[in-house]
Image (cartoon, rainbow, N blue to C red; front, top):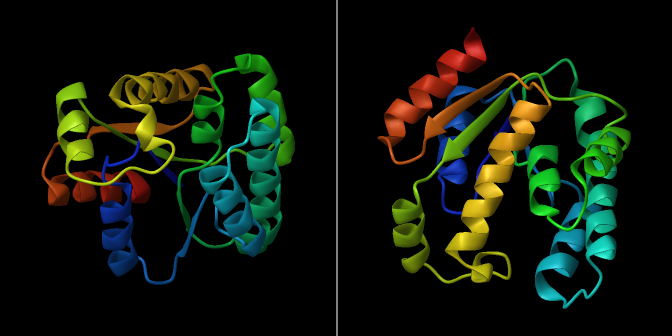
Length: 186
């Protein structure tokens, strides 16, 4: 299962609650769920990478390594990831969707997650949440950029026909958590 959404939507909060509910689950994230992923995340966020293609392939390398090191060995367990390939496709604005789908399926050896949780924010709520924190390189691109990414996340989920639960990230934290648990356990 992957929890998707733009920065400040509450993914981390929900993951912390899910850790309490499912202590036996494997919790991970993309990018950064493996030692290679930590290095890739640092490269992308801290360096001025000029080539969008280089950035894309760094994320794909992380995804492939993550799949091999985290997902494959734990297929018999509940795996909950903070972001995944849906974000990978959605943030790669410079590339055609069909190419991105193919490359991501290759990185995942054609295994897609069985459930996606998408936490969605209104423009007003996103603006409010972003104003309350310092910004990394991605968040510094602004509200319009993140709203575009959010639209793409929803589009990718629909185009791939993924089993998804789309939630209003402005709802009460416990209400969101209960809906996620119900979705996981159905």
